[in-house]
Length: 435
Image 1 (cartoon, rainbow, N blue to C red):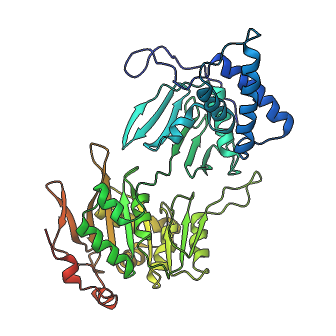
Image 2: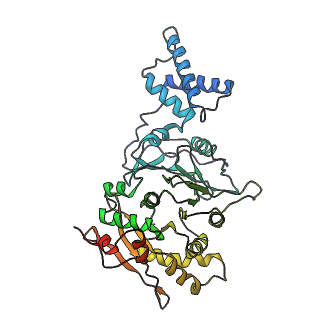
Image 3: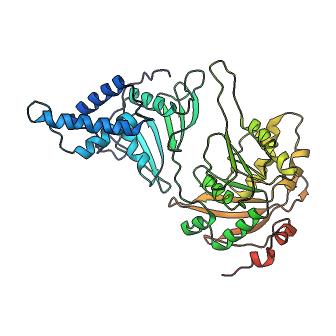
């Protein structure tokens, strides 16, 4: 990884204009001594602290015990808080230093580093500046440690990286000169906020009425697109929808980085792969979609479609294989338009004359989720595609829409009423407003 040559950021002011306080987890002088001793013993004994947590903790306890024996008869600084020192040394050697307490905090959803002295976290959808301050070298070393378990790299030939961290969080990093001055780091934690639609109802993301309908739609094998902006909760909603799939079905998932956590018995999860140092061995999302079709799937789920892989997904859905995916879009209608545009990236021989009717025939529902001003996530609309196209425009029907800040039943109906009947649902009863 290339060195960052920028000077340390000015620590004299924060966003609020006041001097920043050092992190409460800042190592004491005693912890510095202990950390140096433990690091040397780790080197001598060949322990990998990131992998072997148990041996690392035992070693820290051993060194602290010896340190406390020596303090009374030497000039060593006193150890004022043993538990805090243990945690600080462990975080520095086996964790990710000052970031570890934020990684361990269940309320923190995302962490990002804009500059060595500008570290932010997001809680409940709202961002805040932390008191954590690094040096440029510490940020660089931290990213290298985060990438080590995944085997992915970040260098001049590959200045962007997406990788999975040991705790399931997703790391994204970019280096200069793609960024102006400093390494940019984003860590999106896998916060288990909801495993099923009932959990989303409890969180206020969905109404019970809409949840009952979506659960039935998934059971009946309708093809569902989850749309929304960044951090809107698309992956959480998609994961909840997946867990409504009957347990007897075989699910194949394809993602850029593992984020979905299906709680089902028969699941195969696949992720993309970067090219090696020679530029070979890259596995793109489009390839995963194609390979998934050879794996006897009952359903296929793509974590997020961004490019030409949308064409392969549409072809799979059009062949009768049920599936789901997520998509960045500002509304359900924009998601439909985008899904008609992305497949055109696959080649000049792919035209809207083929794509538009294929989208109309293949996609059944679009669920749009967004972030409220207070940081909470809400499903804003559920739209159906009846399958009709007029003058190149796909017809849509609102099933649920937001009125006066509430998700309420609209007048539309989903396609494939016969599927609902086949699975024992009476569509009129399912959509009846019981409020």
